[in-house]
Structures are given as C-alpha cells and as structure tokens.
Length: 295
Image 1 (cartoon, rainbow, N blue to C red):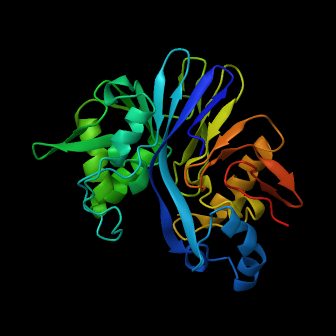
Image 2 (cartoon, rainbow, N blue to C red):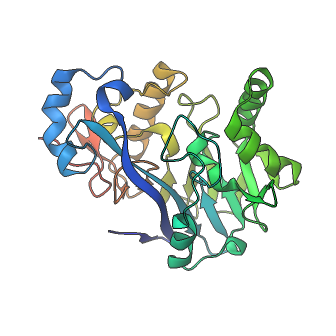
C-alpha cells in the first residue's frame, strides 16, 4: 500500500487513522438505485470500495505535504477522547494509531507549520486538538490553522443556535489559542499552496492545490466520498448540505483535472486513495486512486 508520493518538488504522505465500512451505499447516496449499484458492484468490491453487505468502505486520513519551505497537514481526521455517540468507531476513542502513523512517516506534532481544513466536519478537524489536563489544546503547537471564512462563519452561526460538538472541541479552542487564520479564497502560502472553492458538501468547502506555478497535486476533501461519484458525478451523498451544488461542483472539478498530470488526493477513497483523473464515457475514473475501472 502506497503511503508516500513525490510530484514536482512536493513529497506527500498519507496518515491513515481508520479504513473501514461506513454507511450502506443505498442509504448514503440517495440517488443511487439498486439497479445502478448492481451494475457497479463487481468493480467496487474489487477496489475495496464496497463490502459484502453493500456498505461503502471509506478511508479516514490526513495528508502531510512537504514543500521546499513548509510542512503542511491537510485535514486532521477523527481524534481521541471526543464524544461522538452517533459513530461508535469514533466515540471517545483512545488508540495511538494516528501518532504511530505520524511517526512512521517521520513526523512529530512539532514539525507541522500549517494545518489546513477543507471543511469543518467532525472527521476533518478531530486532531486539531487533544485533551490535556481536562482542556482541549492545539495538537500541533507550532502550526497556524487555516479555516475558510465562509465555512467558519457558517458553523459559528449554526453552533450559536444548537451546539455542534466538533466545532466546540476541535475548532473554537484553536481560535481561542490564537492559532487560527480565517481566510478567503485568495489565501496562499508562498508560491506552492492555494485554495480552490468547492462548495456544496458544506457552504465553505474548499480544495487545496499544491505546486509551483501549477497544480501538481490537489486535495479534494469531501467533494467526493466514493469512487462511484467519479463515474456518476450527479450522485451526491446524504451529508451534502446542498446536493445539487455539490454535484455541479464535482463535475466542474473533475473536468478541470481530467487528463492532466495533477495528482488527486482524495479524503475517503479506499487505499491507495491517490490517482489521476481520467475520462470514461460521460463520467470519469481515478486509476490508482481506489477508483477502479468500470466495465
């Protein structure tokens, strides 16, 4: 299984926290019919994107990108000690998987210069903080944490109406510690790191592009959860806040990177999760990225 990639002057490491069954495909993707699932079951199972009970298999991971000047972590996964009663595999977790994966890749928490979150959902902010003496403190003490302003404002307003636990334990403590950068889409880090707005899954969802003067790699976050959505970009998941917008954004993204040399680093595709977008019929696929090749 590939955990390290080199492209241009970047080195990319996958930091896997979990890879497991998640939600039944027909439940997670409302537009998916039993007939369409049947047509795609064989290649999805071969790609480890679907288990024997037709439950989607997802990877939950961070990426660490080494540029010539910075060490940047993209999305901080699930985290430990956090109350997530609706997700038993995440609820009050206490394992050392994430830190072992960091160490295996050659990093400690002190090495990270930036933590960049594609959006502020529970499985993308978890290791923003850790519990120390009963308090949530930033996990990466030397890092600036980058949150999109539209995304941050949306969850600030939502949390003011009804408490959003991941926002309270994994985002606000970072802000209170003075570690957050609330940014707009023109934000960049040097000449290697840029923001690409990709709304739909959440209002301020963004992708991150890396490379000197061109996109050598792009980190797509929750723009797509399953390789099935590359073949059928119109299929949105039930967790997308605006499913129509998500579908439109997804197709635009896939068209943008189709048949280019840009490495697409997905958040949740099964291992190896990373590949280049290619066209097939009216859809796309991601060979090498857990995307399979439909017949």
